[in-house]
Structure formats: C-alpha cells, structure tokens
Length: 460
RNA sequence: GGCGCGGUAGCAAAGCGGUUAUGCAGAGGACUGCAAAUCCUUGUAGGCCGGUUCGACUCCGGCCCGCGCCUCCA
Image 1 (cartoon, rainbow, N blue to C red):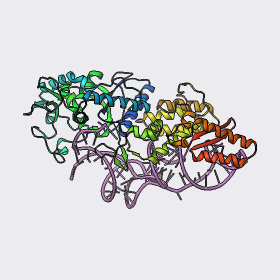
Image 2 (image 1 turned 45 degrees about the vertical axis):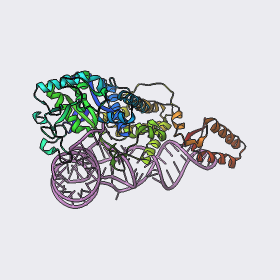
Image 3 (image 1 turned 60 degrees about the horizontal axis):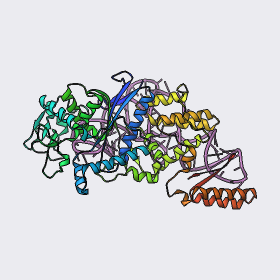
Image 4 (image 1 turned 30 degrees about the vertical axis):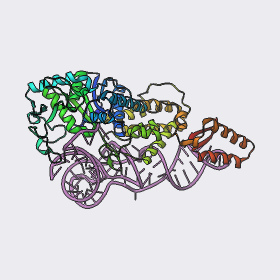
C-alpha cells in the first residue's frame, strides 16, 4: 500500500486513487523567461520519479506539468530584450526541454501553456464572480475575496489573522483584504498588445494563480488525485488555487498535495532573488546528467538538498560503484522480478512516501552481492535502477565519460595507444616503463584496470 | 512577531522502541609484477536536560541551535 505525505493533512496517508487504477497528477512547472536552475531540476526529477513509481505500481497516470508563459517577469524581460513574448518563452521552453531530457525526465502527458487557456480562466473567474467571491477594483482589476472563502489557510496551516499580511510588504490599495489576490489584471497602456485579451471585465490578462486552477480542471477534472510543486508554492500559490477552484466548483479540488524541499547552497535557499543559483546547463558542463539525477534521488524529496562540488563528487563516486557492478551485464531491458527480497525491500521503501534514499541503499546492497559472484542480481540491479530512471546506460560508456576537461584532452585513440605501449612494456617485463605510462595516464585523469579480459580504463 | 521543519558518526544521508542502514573518505587484510577494481575485517553516531519504558537515536515535555514560510520564487 502506497503512503504519501499529504501537506494538507501534515502526515502520511494511504493513497487511494479516485478512479480505481488511475492517477491524475498536476505539478506546477516553470515560468519560462530564464534558464532552469537546480531547484527546477529537483521538481522535474522528483515528480518524474513519482510518476514512474505510480506506473511501476500498476497505475495508469495522467501527468500534467504546466508552463507559465505570461507574467510580469516575462513581460519585463521581453521588453528588455526587445523581443516578443512568444519568442522569449518559445526559446526558454526549448532549453527547458533539453535540460529535462538530459536529466532523464520523461515528457509529461500534457504541458499546457497558460496563454492557451485564457478562455477557461475567464470562465472560472466568471463563476467566482457569480458565487460572490470576486470583486472589481477601481483600477479595473478583478480580485478574489479571501475572507469569503471559509477554508482559506488550510493548506499552509495558517489562519488569515496569522498571515498578517502587510507586515513585510506594502499592501496594494484597492484590496478589500491585504491577502486578496488578483484574478484578472486590467491592461496597462505601456504593456505590449501581445499580453492583452478581451474579457467581460475589459482588456487585460489573467493573474498568476488562476492558470493552474483552470488548466488542472480542464485537463484532469474538477477533482483529481495529486497536486505537486516546490515547497515555496504552498503559500500563497497553492492556497489560492484551492480557494479559486473550490470557490468556483464547490467541489474538493485535490486529494493529496505534495511539496518537495529546497535545494540549498551553503545552507541557504537557492533562489533567483538571492542570486545564488546554478543553472542546470552550468552544472552539466562539469557533472554528468545522470549524476545530477542520482544526487537528487539519493536524498528524500521533502528534505533540503545541499549543493556543492564536494557533494556532487561524492554522488559521482557512488554512482560509479553501481555502474562498476554492472560491467559485463548484457544489454537489453529486463523486467523487475518483484518476488526477489531486494525488490521487495525496494518496493517497501518506495511505498513509504517515495523513500528513494532507502531504495538506493538497496541498490548498493545488490551491487555488493553481484560483485560477490551473483551476476543475475546485477541484471536485477539494473532493472530496479530503471524504475528510478537510473543505470540504463552502457557501463563502459558511463565510466569512460566525464567532464570535458577530464582526460587531459586525451582522445580515446591516444588512450588506447598508450595502453598498448604499456602492455608491450609489461610483456618485456619493463615494469618501470609500464608504471610510468600508467602514472602519466592517471595524471591525465585516466585510470587503468588490468583484468582477466585485458586492460580497461575509466575516467577518474 | 506568527506558523512550520530539522539537528544522526570525518562528510553525505535513511529507517527503526531492543537486532549491520547505505555511499564517500580512513585503517588493516586478500587479490595484483606494482596498481586499480572487487572481496573480507574495522567506526561503541544520534544537540542539551528531564520524563515514559525492562529497554529510546527512535515516544512525550522543556531548552539551545539551524532553516523555511508569512512577498515574486521549484
């Protein structure tokens, strides 16, 4: 039985899909005006893992991850760059797709873009207005009246008074309550025509929160199973999504809310506002993409994840051990044998709120047993790794791959040449020369391993 | 100020009321021409103070420290 930590309940709960055998899941994705950073990588990888595990559990999954392609920051950036919104967002969607693919993240079933769902958002705002939950301001905006929605604050565990809005931020005038948020923004003259839509409330554009409510309902129905995102979206974004959707439909919006922990740098949250973020592309110049995925998955999704070169290197070494155990395993996909004790422990770990750290620990125990002379276990190790989206490459390819600067610029042909020279020296019992060659290669980041089948090499 | 999360061995990171987590690093040994990889052996970790219990890292309370949210942010 799968158990999931539900933010709404603040505890792990048995997970029962609304429709038997089927899971509908929505995750808040990227705002596309810049490159994805490691924090985005974590969301993508974590929920990719969740989706894979649900599938491995025999469930049919419909996975939606939205793309926010209209908001203040996008407009500002496009104006700065002197390009259209569409050109800017299109470009960064392309980069995002590349990053996701590198990290082994499978395409969601739907990747709705906010700009394609404006009519649905308007429809929902209309319903909110009809239900007495929305009001117009003097500026022509439409706001949500938070005080009129009884459950407001349930997800973040705060009462309206506790939130004490205005303490850290100046309150917009025209709001009935400081926590009221905008559903529809009236167009401003300075804004590009591209961001102006006709509506019953005049020309304008949607507020940020409404897109997820509208797209979620359109693609997954008014009530669905899982909604996820980064911890920072819990309040106010997800709180507002609940208020909007339930305020419009009168039905429960989402059963299970999942929030992944932050990536940190030097024990501080990695964020755009702090400017201490690393983009995925930067990291991939130095570390293998699978190492990044492994680094993310070896921590629990709700824990903070501290990024540093040392930790990444640690992860790289650990993954190397796994791939080393896979050497000699014939290629080809193999089904997991769930009757195996290891597989059962893996499953128990995953069923307990996606316990990837423990599941990974099982992988290492399998590597150990495989190394002790149980090649069948190595085959299962790879199969189980595949459930997490890991260990599917040719071991030699992984072991010989490395950062561009590794290898001291030596090509594979040059390496092979030197290995042969060393073999000749060894044959002539000129061990001093053989060791000299090996040392030189080691200094270039290439390690040699003499085995029964000859000499193989890998990157340090 | 309000709300919430966490403090585990050199580093990273889990589960668990009593039995080896796991990985990296370290020490010793096997193997090897020497190495590497691998295997074997090896670490009396659980912020502090109380309480519950036959027994607590694991439950309860207090304290200290760190972090997050309360504002755009994954």
